[in-house]
Amino acid sequence: MDLLRFATAGSVDDGKSTLIGRLLLDSKAIFEDQLEAVEATSSAKGYDYTDLALLTDGLRSEREQGITIDVAYRYFATPTRKFIIADTPGHVQYTRNMVTGASTADLGLVLVDARHGLTEQSRRHAVILSLLRVPHLVLAVNKMDLVDYDQAVFEKIQQEFTAFATKLTIPDLTIIPISALKGDNVVTRSEPMSWYEGPSLIHHLEHVHVASDRDLVDARLPVQFVVRPKSDDFHDYRGYAGMVAGGVLKPGDDVLVLPSGFTSRISAIDLFDQELTEAYPPMSVTVRLEDNLDVSRGDMICRPQNAPTPSQDIDAMICWMTNAPLRPRQKLAIKHTTRSGRAMVKDIQYRLDVNTLHRDLETKELGLNEIGRVQLRTTVPLLCDPYATNKTTGSFILIDEATGVTVGAGMINSTT
Image (cartoon, rainbow, N blue to C red; front, side, top):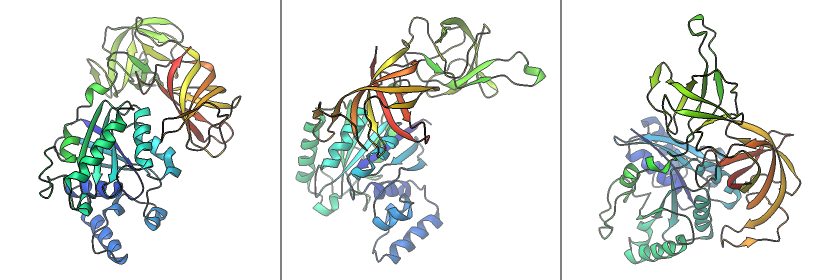
């Protein structure tokens, strides 16, 4: 079975946690004692229904306030596919958490309350998912039971969001009317919404095609670890372990090692105790080469005719994640794939208003949760691709050297 990672997003109280609880419950991914505990908590709060949001809102402060603060990851499976859900916060104060949860997603699930329609936060999250190049987007119009399953209400929201989405980079958009509380169109089709002829949410999640979303053209293997066993049986063994970030690697392929520029040929590809005939994203493998080259952590194995250009001047979109603002001339640590170095902010070109898509060209800094276009100069050459081409080699994080805290996440536009 293949794996689908998807992130939920939307405004506070749109029902994200309830929807995930419904998916877990109806797909039989909840233990009886978990359900009993949630039912008891719901009863103690005076609810006349089971509050499924309690299955994902695990922090005490989340349960007290009835909102999601941190990113909650949940796992479940159907006979067709395995799923990893990132339940991301809806409040603007936790935009950075939403970016973190959605950064690895194959699909973004944005919820809107049918009573309120599109909100500022709904648009904000759609823009962020577009910036993160999440290839598939589902708009779930929730709480249809509170508008009497009115088709006109759904169609109005559908038309409004479709018009807004034309301004964004969204290759695949699906809009589904649901009721997370009642279970309509979540796992089973809704009888009150017989006018809706599309798939249920779980059917769409099971069948959306994501294998072709990965970069299978540009071969990229950032070296994470050099494998040299101490055993006498393997005294000649030298392998380079890492997660394939792009392309397809096969024994016999000619390869180039960057930044040294040495060339060799793949002699074998190992996965645990077996040899593979090919490796592709996101497999973690060990590659052996025919020649003994000087290869270490932070280097990249790629194809001689299709290699990234090492660059120290980076143009990127940055999501800033800490209270102290980002300013020009600031120095930070940078981590790109398995390569680490230091970076200086040369210039902040503009701050992006994710609600209106307006570019503030006069800005001098980026504050907490703000997104902007930034020019960086790094101390070591980065072996990178544009984020639009490869999300792994096109992304990086910025770290405060004094505290070790991750303060920013970047998506590379281009290099010079």
